[in-house]
Image (cartoon, rainbow, N blue to C red; front, side, top):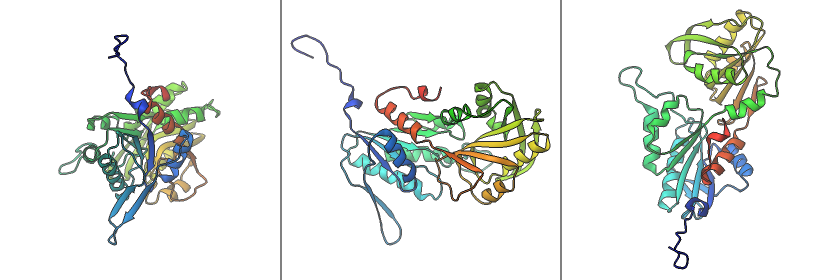
Length: 323
């Protein structure tokens, strides 16, 4: 209470907190670009190891009362997740004011339900671990399933790669384009692009006999003479994408390319891509590529995440970045 005027002075606490950006080991390449776009350097973390390989991340500067952002994708190996959890715990014990985990690729998201007996719901377990470590907020992009946000009891900023891909596609000739989903589960994602560009949508209906192996696939809709763009959230072995591309070309398409946010690209993925009918694969840099491929084009997510970090700190809308 101000004694002279009788008014109450309100303070925006977050505006008073200093922003600190830190990176895990495997996401340093992206974190450095995010920090550059944001306009400040990354904070210093030293990663010590015991002789048996056990990790000990040390935050080498004060974070007391700070608005801390840890940038780390949780793709394999599991050490990436463990490193993130240990960094969170270190910041919490050092009295950080507010801790946000920036997880461009949220690993274990494909295990989001019990689809058969005696299996874990791994996405929920990871959510619990992040919260138990001391996370106040999660920032991620293109979760495998939107409902994973409900596994958290803290705020989740779910960014969408259409904020990256749509501006890129607007510079392309889409006069003969049709968008396609490589499976029924991705229809909503592909439909968003078809709606944005007022284009047709086709669906590839697949079924599996075991994980990472497509047993059969059919195309629902006409692709005759069209330039088709397949849309998915991630590409792992590339088996589904390549099978879809091959079938679409057999149905009379003129060309097929794909957009997948997260380039896991494990197993025979690179060979599958090179031997497929796909002319191009667009991905984001949420996961580092294992090797170069003439068919793969990488678009950076750094600008989107830097803006989201700034909006979070300043209590401005995140949705405005991609709607």
